[in-house]
Image (cartoon, rainbow, N blue to C red; front, side):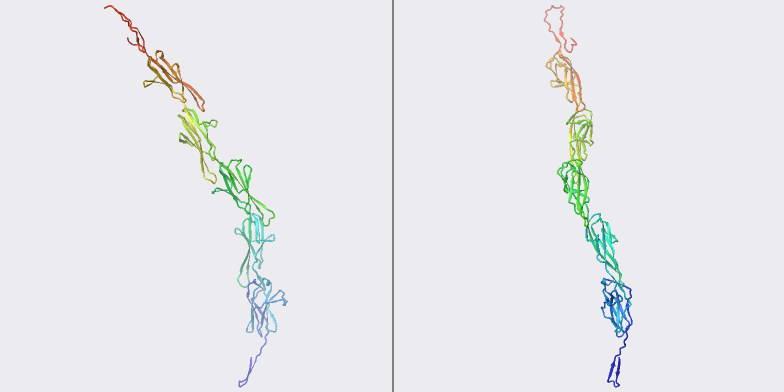
Amino acid sequence: MYTCILDDKTKSATQFLALPVPVTSVKLTPQYNVLNVIDGLPIVYMICESSRGRPSPAITWYLDNGTQHTYLDDISITSSPHVSTNDVATSTLTLTPTIRDTNQSIYCNVSNGYSVISSTERPRLNVLSYPSRPIIQYNGTHVTEVYIIKGRNMSFECSSIGVPTPVIMWEIPPGKVINNSVLSIPIMQNGSYNCSAKSILSPSQGDKLATCNTSVLSVNILYPPEVIRCTIGERSMILSGIIKVVQYKPFEMNCTSDGYPPPTNFTWFMPEGSKSSETRLELPSVKSIGNNSYTLRVSNTMKGTFDTDVTVGYSTTTFTFDILYPPMMPDLYYNGSTHMPINTSIIHVLRGHMVSILCNTSSNPNPRYNWFVDGTQTTTAKIWNAKIQNNTRVQCYVSNTMNATGKQSVTTSSNSLMTIVTMFAPDTPTFTFHSCGTIVKTNYLKVIRGRSVNGTCTTFSNPDSIYSWIPATFGHLNSFVIRKSNSSNSGNYTCTATYKMITTFDGTIEGNTNSSLFLDILVPVDVQSIANATVELNSNYSVECRYREGNPVLCQL
């Protein structure tokens, strides 16, 4: 700036002189051959600086469209004005790169009216991008939800686009991680199969950025009916095997099985050959038929997303009935031998014999045995042994406890009663006589002639003996009666007791025993009368005393 001033300083004139200084260079900082940037994330750190120049240089920014030697198709990306200080212009680039800018170069031009100078630094944009949402495919078909039969070997491919190329990872139930883009395993479990695409974005300026994008494949497992579970009553859960049931009682069992789709076909195969298509096995009365096995077959139909045919799944279980029944009325056997059944309520045995009675019955579960003799419990064995002396009442009591599956325990019982009658031979008979309220037991009876004789011959036996007399004149059964005795009645009388014991198992035993009675009829002496006689005084006189001997014989006259 030049000013001309008159001496009096009243007048002046000013002239501005501008010295043109063309810009000679331009610098782009920071310097990168490749500039890594993140898609959609603004960059504000690229600075273009000119050399000194007058007039002040203007700065413009460009994207080289890939044709380095042609500028006609370059794209201006100037977004902010330059700043000049001391004839030096600077400009900061503000750019939000997109994936379309990949491989394009950034440069800046400066000019102050004389020539255009481009920056020699031309960093190429490498636009880093987030992983795209993964695409899951099966045989080239995009899938998000599939139905697969359990255990099938399936191959799913997961892909994602991003810069840098994402790393593909599968996370499958139950928390297993597979570092591969292809998932090829037997599919065993329902759930979400997550495919994740991960990458680390490392821009040239700024912090690294971990990125992830995930797609979910919903897997529905089709599987055949699994373990069949059955319930009886409210308490018992059974899968297979033996079921305890009570004979002739109603029976009901409900069965279920897990499967997908849920099983709809239930078929029972009965022992007698019939079938039933119910989830419930219901019998009005349990009976023993064949092998007592009941088989349940459960099925469902499965068709996966990629299957062409329907697959039928099966599950089968078998139950065998253990049929419980109470003890039947027990059978009794003599001497512990099944060859000698006791078919009557009364048996006859000899007194003093050892008796062995076998009690036998059938039940399920096995019976418990208890013997009662005249009301008193004696033993819990199947065989009762005793030496019999008197008539005895014997009871075999059998019981069992039926623990039917799913039911309360029930105790049942039965019994057989029997009377044992003892038989024994008679003792030696005894004689008993009655006279004027007097009872005399004797084998030698003296009776005054003319008196009556009334007596009995008795003995004790079972069964009662049959009596006979020798001579049989005055004996009838066991009675001996003489209405008016005389001397001719004196003598020996024999009473014979004859017995016949018919035992139940030891045959017939016969015999007799006897006893003798001597009857002595007492007779007074019979003196004959002496006739009156007239005799001479003081003369000898002789007379005879005539008499008949009595009984007992006269000892003295």
